[in-house]
Each structure stands twice: as structure tokens, then as C-alpha cells.
Length: 190
Image 1 (spheres, rainbow, N blue to C red):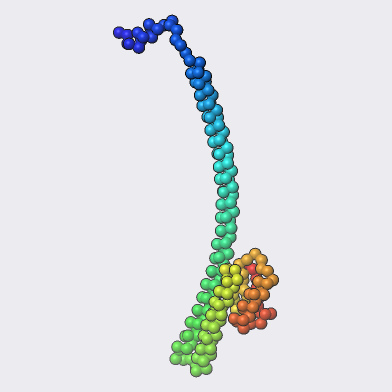
Image 2: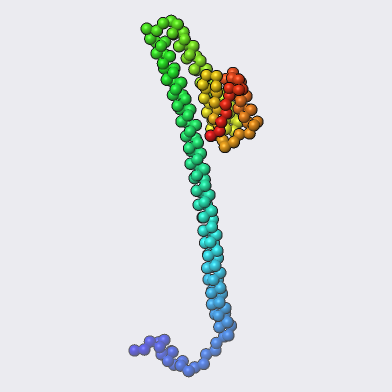
């Protein structure tokens, strides 16, 4: 049995139908616009993807450079942290040795007086070093370490270069706080 639509189509075979030309033009224009829009969307996507890829490549390069800088900075930070720790450990061991002399019943009175003087001297040196390192930090050199060896004082600064005026400021700090002669102050960079 034929459906109603099949009967309608069979009855209309050969009949003329009025077709609006605007519908044809509109349909063709819509098809062209769809193709154009698709092309524009595709080329925009390609351009966006290319820009995105370029941006990603630049970000990757910058990221790698930042990582290298960060690793170098971490290595540099580790040097200063390790150096300060080793220096403080050395002072602690010296203090411990002198305290043993003080607490020993076998120590002579002169040895105890000498140990007391050395303890005082070490504590004053440690305090002066701490003040110097903090003051040098305020001058913009957060990575710095001060070593005292008798009359000679060595300052290591975490910078690729130091200006002459900065050297003078650091020498002034060390000279004032540690009561050292300028010729005994040695500044180096790391």
C-alpha cells in the first residue's frame, strides 16, 4: 500500500511548480558563505595555532632559560648557605673545645682565663660577621659570606661583578664593624 506522500508525489509528476529565484540565489549565497566562513575559520585556526605554537616555543625557550638561571641561582645559594654553615660549625667546635677547658677540673687557672678570652673573642667575631653580612645584604647583595682568618677578612659576594663604589661600601662596613684595616679586607665575587 502506498503512503500518502508517495501518492502526492506520483500525482505531481510533470506538474510545474513556481520557484522563487531569490531562494536559489539565497541558497547559493548561503553555501558560498558557509564555504567562505569555513575557510576563514580554518585559516584563522591555522594562524591562531601557528601563533600559539610560536608562543609555546618562546615560552619553552624562556622557561628553559629561566630554569638554567634558577639552577645557577640555586647552586649559588647553596654555596653561600653551605659556607655559612661550615663556618658556624667551625666556631661551634672551637667554642665547645674552650668550654671543655673551662669545665675541666684539670685545667689551670691561666688556661681557664685564656679559654674565657677566646670564647668572648669568638662570640664578638660571630656577632660582627652577622652584622656585616646583614649590612651587605641591605646594599643589594643578598648572597654574601664573610670569613675571618686572624687579621685577614675575606668577603665573597654573589654577583658577576661589583662596581668600585660598591666595593668601597663593603670595605667601609667591614672596617667599621670588625675594626679592620682596609688593606686586610679582600672582596671577591662568586
